[in-house]
Image (tube, rainbow, N blue to C red; front, side, top):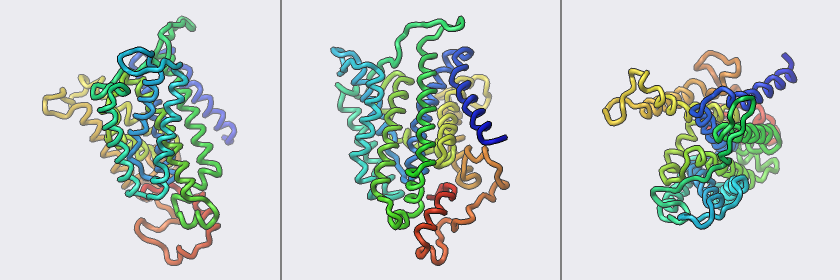
Length: 378
């Protein structure tokens, strides 16, 4: 099959996956699909930052919260119990992503100067600040109990082919379309000049600087883009759960997003979406069908609940990806060697450097980095 036919078939499959389900699925599955789309957008943003640019961040929950609160304040009707400006919901949603990007831009000078675990530690401060603001700024956020999220679409019902299209059908199309556009933009970015520069910055900052790449500027760009993706995801997430509360944007949410991109495969846009689908859907499905699963116990009974089982599964999956299949779910698309034999011929083992690496010509480093698979230890 030629590449053109394969690409056409892929686009047809994506189009059908977005257009057809509302004609057959009920409210439960449509709501779950919208939640998966929201998480997928956020995971794409994080994989651009962590997988492609090599910057570890635990601040994703903070930017999700910025987008969600901004949307609530701008879209809520004026004169209510909580502050609201009554702007059109599309404007409020875009503003949520933009303001999250500006927050990322404000933090980017710090992000550009730090690397690896040091950036991860520093980014935790943003989540702690966000939690404090969410709790004390009651007129904006609703305080500890949070505030309701304004609806993203109107509640009028339109009948198409004898199928009533209400709120959840509309949300499905909005979530699916937004996810596809976000994924296409990210794929093109990674495949282009900016993506190659980010990969080189991730693999070797001295080599990137030697070939004229402004390292700190590209690291800042990655952080801002990731923040905007998170802000948009926060808007959709707030709409999906119907409220904005501090516990919805705590540190464990940032950890779950890291789990998504690790399970999906670091640096892979499609893998990020797949990981988001697994991490978002598994707890919901286990809870929905808990009565039919004998190994699950009722909450408060002392046994393994649906939430516990999902987190155990995530932990096992992360360990398996790190130890066995470094490319995660994304690796299932490729023919690979047997499990345990995946390696990078051009890369030394973790923690070791080949003799003479510091003398390699920068242009050669750049060419090699464009063909080097992403590694979870980078």
